[in-house]
Length: 523
Image 1 (cartoon, rainbow, N blue to C red):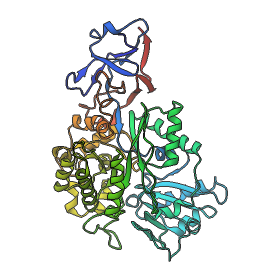
Image 2 (image 1 turned 60 degrees about the vertical axis):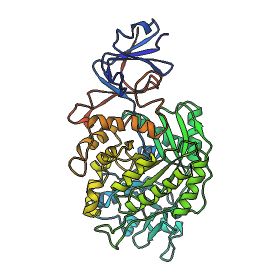
Image 3 (image 1 turned 180 degrees about the horizontal axis):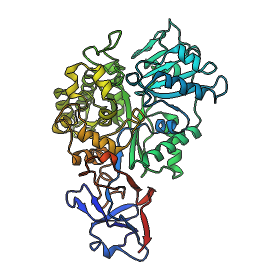
Image 4 (image 1 turned 60 degrees about the horizontal axis):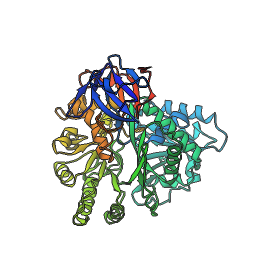
């Protein structure tokens, strides 16, 4: 047997306990066939073998983002107005005015990323009307759980002071705000993107993520048109990195339920999971808590988006059809609900069958009892360490003090025996870099002692995601038989004092460079 390609001349962390650190990796047909020293691999090298000199760089198994909204990342890279990181309302209004000037009258102006904790308040309807007088406007908060509309957009959506909010949502007509499921009222009148638009946003998002060293991701909220776009790209061989999909069952503001999707498994696209939203977001004070938030008027404990029996019935249907389930749950009330449903699903597993290990997306405010039950049920936790870096001010602003020690407490999750798959939830945050997320997981816990070791964080960005997505027999480690997916860095994330500052030198998928200046030469 010969190798198609050999990477050598660097330090390679395989995360394989049999050979944790090597100097060379050989691949054939897009999969690893051997690891070791270059001398160990000499017998696999022929005149046609490509040799890639890492030139002292450090390679790790391809990094994975277990929860990132790919097409929304791409939309902000291309067509949507990006408001993330702005620190004044005047800047928001100025950006809106500049974008509105480029649009035809009546054309929708869509943007995302405002954060009242940075801006000193929420965008005002009157100011938005002045900035966008000819165009309906919808600006989504950075968390995507709250949306502000100008008067024309409210009119088109049919929202008045007398409009009743759907279950699991709320309307603040005077403030132009739609919370949670009430977004469905606006969604009905927004222009429907063509498949070409969706494909363009997907590709822009994936290319952006590949430049940050990601070789695989999970897009955690996909509907039928988006699924069709992904499948078309996969059929054409155009997906640059690997994608796992969570298919939505219930759209915002609707009582109708999407049917279960057709399963799809290829080397670059996987869909065998479904998605539910149990509550809102933590940074915007809409996650479902058992006590009121601080600094929120009128008093609020967030939103629970599902009736428990309804959620259970939909989840049971999916489980009986063999689907994994990923449920967004952050607040303690939502965690109670979802873990209770998962416990019922676990008990409903027919005798002799191995229970499906479901996921909880975010897992933000888990108490010890939640951790214990999640461990008993084999639940995968999919939190976002990067929130501790970018959204810490929101947590301190809104959360009662007793909640702070358990806010995204990654240490408690690992110590409880959970599989942790780290992610960004981009574009909720500006920085979708897994390296910045790794640094946050290690160095920026909400309370001292709750951080991870660098190795634990790296595992959560590789092995953890592979386990949560059902691909642990293909990726997460660099070992014979696994896909030859690597992320090449200019330093060692296990020893560098600021791994978030490391540069991605190459993103390698199936032994092909999708974003890499790595030297390649014939043998």
